[in-house]
Length: 443
Image (cartoon, rainbow, N blue to C red):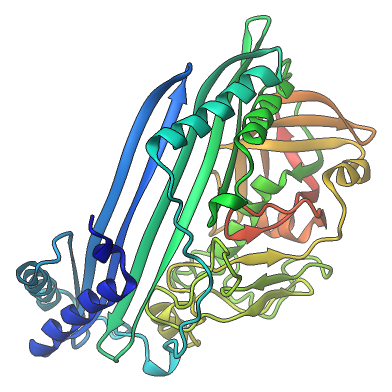
């Protein structure tokens, strides 16, 4: 892919040209352009297992013919192909059912300023150097613990992408962003039993990544720590979600607070805005403008202005996550969340994980979850899990083949504490979470 294709100005020009083609047909249009390229390598057994170069290029066109909507996509940016893509979207719109809620985001909600959020940090690394980093992670994992059986995979990746959006209301904006990563998967073995451990690091800047040695070592430690895992009898007990998994609780809150689920009446938080949904000591801030944030964005997926706001204030849900369409359906104001939330920052009480374990005393520390047993309509929650049983505030033994269950409404209200061991490798920043009680199903 040429350097020009990875230019925000180029992507904006393509988007703007498609809007002009639609206008010539008497149609309103929204156009998103995405281009990107990257590299990923994995090693196994001291040898390169995969080496992949990635190149992405697509234009997505949505046109509105009155209340009828049609969409089409192309990977060819030639003028002829762009015209054909608009024509295809127009054909779909002509045959679509009218929807009185459809249409472009109203101009007053569009972003007026597009700030530089320091998201673009290309990593000029060769395939050979990436392989060398992956091998360092694998070697560190193998050397870290005597009971490491093998390193299943160690990998390095880098990616740079450009996103542009334009519409018939005159909005046009673009920005570039990068995401780089290291990961390692390790197998530990003891007395014929095996356990897998995983660790990773991800950041906008390569210099912000953890060292490959620390990634490999932590993956090995997590694998070996799970050896000798036991089952539990069914019981009710306090539960701690490790910080990496606690992001999923916030994800469920977001899903239940999102416009699509709300107007379909498929959410246990329907009509919950302004009510207490979490303990009074909890706050959640949304900050789209966090420099180098993995969830930062100067505008949302339909050109809407993004906003700093307090989503949870003293445990009260202050509002929802709405795009233009869902806001119209609900009779509310768009919140700049077309495409999802941006950098959710969960307040904490400053305690580390060890302090949370001591506070819990006796219960379950969950370090891995399996399956997707979350029902946002009812709030029912049931997931396969593994982790560690805790006695007298310390890890007693690893556990596996259990299921944890509860209801999200009670789980969110039953949060006892949020730790200061903040997870920073995604768009939700939260520490480990201690819940008052859940059902643990075992033998």
